[in-house]
Length: 235
Image (cartoon, rainbow, N blue to C red; front, side):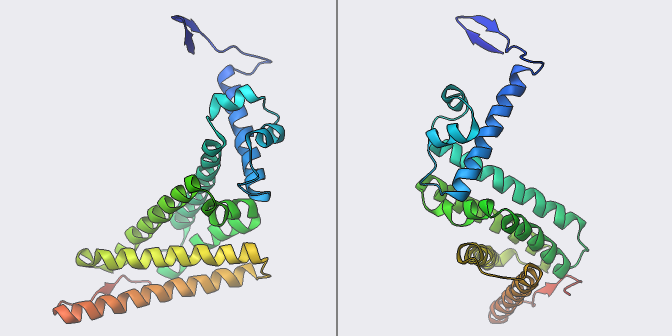
């Protein structure tokens, strides 16, 4: 319901579709148009006029939802991020409870999404660094996903309260390395076997965890503390 000069105006039903539903449908059309243009032509080529033409939504409705093309691009980026996170959490919840299986399940889910629909991969991994507004969002999400990885690492390695910096360094290294590898696959058009790629990435992430454990053991050896202990189910 909207208000004008103190009078309540109910959004009307048109062709059996409530006004709120039509508004949401238009927003979805605009985001899908933004996804297509950003992922296929690039962020720089994505304009308000182009999005309106691609979506079939009139200009007045574009500005009902977004104040600028930058705001639309952030909405597209956030929609892809939400899909990535949803798939990752679902894969994590359904995987066997050992490190290798859980890592592989998450990597497989994200890799399949971003390579099956390369528009989404390009938006997250390469196009997002081309404009300040998306670069800021990308950095925030890399930091957030690194924090999620750090959180799950604490469930595997016990007694890490004094090694927060090392945990975050390792998780940022892992997330950044994965992102750059997929960006290379997408941009170079690398002909890779997807299952093999996921297997290799799994081993590399497990290796990063092993390196992390060695760093902590070294630091604890210098301080005289007991070594870190790994949770069961490493393989």
